[in-house]
Image (cartoon, rainbow, N blue to C red; front, side, top):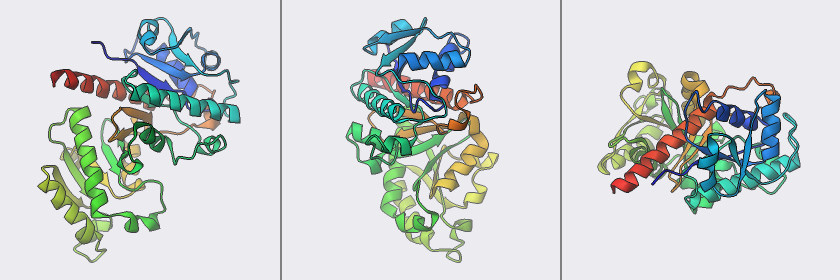
Length: 338
């Protein structure tokens, strides 16, 4: 049985999502990729492509089953609304389209009609104006899957590095109080199982950073390592996971160190994202682990300031599409092997 196409939600239509989706579809013959359908607006996609100098034929579809037949000759679009294309100028109508597209793409993936979903960037402040009450797309998709938000683990992945930040968009001063042995064990185990099921790693090697400089240096620079992180490492090892740490973060990300692990689990946002973006800025993918579906997103925002200029790189969005396709193919093969 053939694998279903991917569903790509259009994101904020005033951002760079539409032009990236159009450009990537236009690359399909020279640079093969998984079949996909855009969930959003057919007219808007054509307007974005025209501004980018692309002649974009569009196939309006009502089901994902139609996407595979259409993909070779036209961009399949599940057409939700007509919205004016005004790059760099977000609007309430555009936010409503972004929310509707996210909702439909999530439903398609949950029902198995799409093999995975890829989410183009949104503007959370704009979505809040139309009733979006989630911290971000990750939490929205988790709810659509019936998964607690705390079990949806964010992984950033590129060709050189995979990282999971255990705390994300919080003030640095709050990080120590948010860390717990239970949090580390739960999220690291979720990540390890996802690397097994979706990335083909039978026994993923996981390195945990310390929180403090030099991983606390035996308590001289903090006690979180001994009191929180070491017990978590021991519990994870007892469960059979190949985990080590806590390791000093300042020596974990050079080339030789990266060869010793498949995933770095970090204590806070910048500890994870600075090395990822330094190494893989143009190919970084945001992956949500712990869901019954596959969801990826490019590791960048709406970039309203350069939307419609032709300047945005397709790298992260193309990497997100390819990663979603690879993970979907692996799950598909594993389901038949079982």
